[in-house]
Structures are given as structure tokens and as C-alpha cells.
Image 1 (cartoon, rainbow, N blue to C red):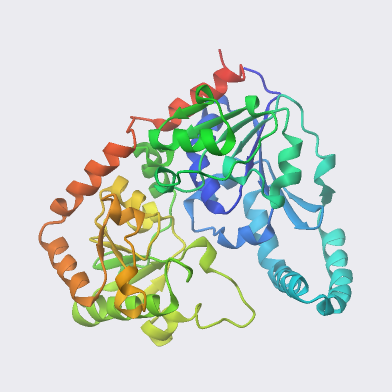
Image 2: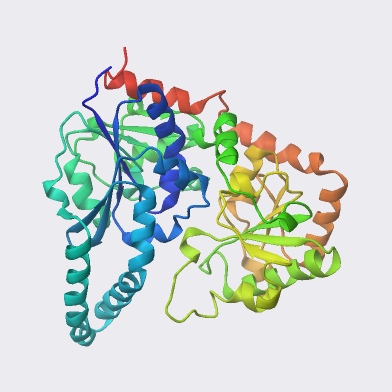
Length: 443
């Protein structure tokens, strides 16, 4: 077994990339027990979704020898662990947020550039005095080193410098999210990839093959359908065992809300009315509790939070926090374990619920939307992975069915999952064996 290889994992566009790659990374680490692992985070704001309570972060902390974080411009911060990186972000998040805000303002109005100059001096003093900084172009990458990433980041200016370092290296791709979008995108915009012969794509399903061919001109022999590694039974169990626990009063009689930020899929009005009805049914009528899993893009960490970030506080009441409702940073595999029901506000976490055998209903209060008659079904509902409800009465009817016969509700989602996604005893092992043999790390 060769000890000279280094494996780099590009965590972009958000924590989801690491979440999907980690079962493979963990298995490679366990089999080889000798490789060097580096986590690359090209946008410091990504770390705001890293929480020590999340098992993915805990497990990563035990694997990665180095973490490289882009602080600003072409200056990178180097840390020896994931936990050190989380602490760094916590200590510097105000400065990081100020820079992010000013950058956005400058893009709209160059007048604000005068505010940037004193902050730049302060920033340089903080980083160059306390932390080891480097230019990523000076990072030594040998041709033997391997990159794990998501091919969908190709063409993105945020990671352009990073990808250029690996043009001559073997690159392996896993999607950062699970969706059905590839089945409907007939003519994707073409993106040219340098040295595509060194790139191998792992797809979750057969319907993604044509999409990868058309978008990236990847040869079919470079696209392998492997299923979903994060849904391996042993990996789900590993995440659950590595997770912290919810407060005792939220272990039972609790429903999980899989939340989403306000965007084109979920308007502000729809979200507010959905949350109000969830409170009426579960807290007020059924005396249940609610645990909320925020989307990575939902935590904006604004200096002054907007009404979009205060929806749960305003509807559930801050005085009731910890009593009838809470936020949770637990991995969804641990958070949803043993729960009677989960509610998705249009999120891809629906697929995780199907894999776990947990009933999940997609609820968006469409009556709050002026476009209600034209509103289309989400891909998750359209393809049968979740039942969709659009008002208080429909949600209440679903809850009654769930409490009476949850297994019946799982039949269709499970059959659809098996129809579209191959199920292996260990998808991770298929990927790991191939990578290790490709690179002659093992015979």
C-alpha cells in the first residue's frame, strides 16, 4: 500500500458535498489507514453550517489532517482540524460577515468602497498575526494526488483556482444533493472540462447519465451508477451512533420540520402560513413538540435579522423555545430517528426519510400564494417520494393516516426509490474499491 497519496475533498457549494462524500472518505481512511486527507473550503461562509453536534463534522474532525479555507482574495487559512476551523469561524464571523456585506454593497454601488479600506487593514492584522496564511497556488499538489468533488462546480469562478490545481490529476465526482432534476432538463447548458479523461463521475441513478453526457461531454465509460453511498445502512447507523442526543423532552412525541429558505420554490407568505398551521395541529391540538432542521442556506447570520429569519420565533414564540419547539444541528439521520413523522418544506431531505423508513409529507400552504392555480407539483411529490398537501385540512388528514397506519404511507415512496435508485448492500464499497484500484493504492 502506497503512503504517498493525498486525497483532497472540495467542500462546495455547501456542507452537502462533504455529507455525500464522507461515507466514501471514511471507508478509504479505514481501509488504508495511511493516506493524508485535506478538506478545501473555498468560501468561509460555508463553515457557518458546520456544527460540533453534527456527526458529519465530528467524523470529519477525526479524518482530515489539514483544512484550507479561503479567507479573502487569494489568501487561505490553514488549520490542522475541522474543529479548529469551526472555532476560527466563530471567532471571526463578524469580520467575515462585514466583508461579505460590503462586497455585495460594492457590487451594487462603488461608493461603498471607501468603507472597505479601514476594514481591510483590520482584517490583514487579524489573519496574518494569528493564523497561518498561504496562497493556494503554492500548495504542493503532486500528480498522484486525488480530488473528490462535485462536477457541477466546474465553471464556477469561486473554485476556478482550486480546480486548475488538479487539471492533471484524477478527479472523482459525487452530486452535492439528491434530486430528480436531471430527468427533466432536456438541453442543459454545456460546460467544457479540461482533461475530462481524468474525471470519473459517480451517478446516483441511470437517468443522470444522459444529463452528464450532454452537459460535460463525459464519455459513458466515465459515468458509473452506484446508488447513494450516504444511504448505506451501516453509514446511517454510524452517523446515528456518532450523534449527540436531543433534549429529553424532545425524544418522543416530536415532529421534525425540514425547513427551507424563502426563494422561488417557497414564498415568504407560503412559509409563514405553513408554519402557523404546523403550530396549530402539532403543538396546539396534539400537544406534540417540533424540532426544526434549518437548510444550510437558511442561516444568513445577518447583523440585523430580517423577517425571513424570524419566522419561527414569531410564530412559535421565543418564550416557548426549548419547551414546545427547538432548532437542531443534529444530522438528519439522528434527528429523524424514531420520529412518527417529518414535514418537508420543499427539500431534498425527503430522499433521506425514504431511505430511513420515516413517513415524510411535503407541505406548502399554497392558499397563501396568488399563483396557487398555476403552482406545479414539486419533483419530490411528482415522482412519488412524498405525498404533497397544500392546506391545513389536508395536512391534518395526512397526520391522522400517519398515526393510524404509517407503513401504508411508506409503500409508494419505497417502491419509487427502488425504481429510480439502485440499492446495494454497500454503495460506498463499490466506489471505494474502484478508486483504490484505479490509483493502485491497493492491489
